[in-house]
Image (cartoon, rainbow, N blue to C red; front, side, top):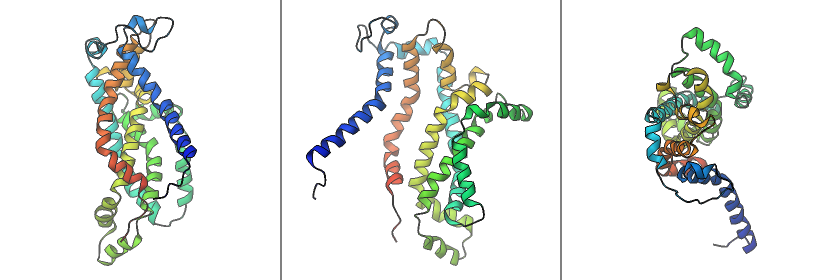
Length: 280
């Protein structure tokens, strides 16, 4: 195999990757170091990357300081998984319809989806609060799950639509000739072939749902037992005396299960992002 890059081009590529990863991972690395430092070293001047007395004590003391930490972590994953499932239920048939069928206003609707993604959840808090208050959904999980899915469905449709457009229509036509219904074709033909793309959408949706929980939960969830991790940690991260080492430790504990699951889903993620077409 002939190397199409010169030696200095290869060095430039790896240097760019190194800079990009450094900028992306530096905040996480600093958060981990803060979780290891004693509180007095965090607020000391001048700043030092490595300090005396670094230990994992904060990872144990945080469970005593925040008794509901386990509830917060469970609520975060419950909300994230619920948003993901609800989003996939809406995205899979919608993406197939937009990818395969021609109908009036299709391009206008897809453009509208892009417009929706530009509107942040903060802008819609007041109208959503009035709607949920009338429906009696305030202080329920639905008040966070429904708008969370609504804001992520447009992005999911665009991602999965581009994948489904590369599926040969002959597969659907053959099933249609054999007398299969559209629901049967979707369930037995489209979904199995699109599984790598569906996994990509599911992962992207879960990450989006996990990261947007604070704003919606702050507005709609008042019971401490129902609050997700970002909102549960909020009182401990504010005030004149904040134990940032314990807050960072709780944050890392909250995202650790997601990091552990990613290696098992990595092959589906790569397959969904790199798949070009289905060969017959």
